[in-house]
Length: 87
Image 1 (cartoon, helix red, strand yellow):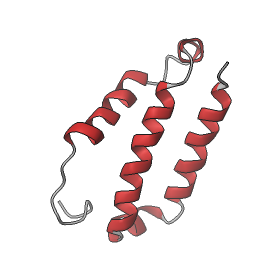
Image 2: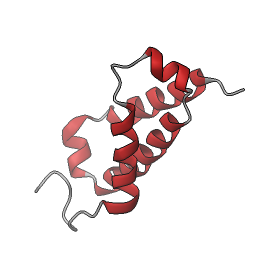
Image 3: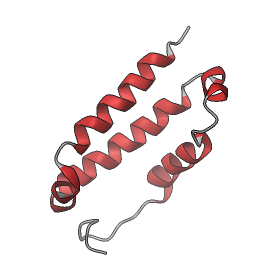
Image 4: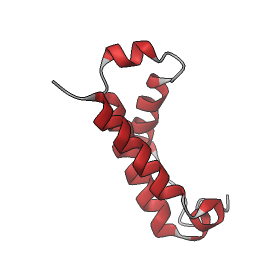
């Protein structure tokens, strides 16, 4: 039986790790941007493994949008060669 807590802890820890430097640090480091995109994909996949029971207890979370976001990253996300902070 899967343990939802492990997935939730994983999501929280990764978000905390990648936001420590703040917005400016993120937008000035393309390697960090690439890493964050990969981690976001992994996090979205992790939320897909959370039980339906837990998701039902937390309807305030838009679980479908998280899943859709993962699909955008994997199948349709193409960014210009410049960094994300400078559209």
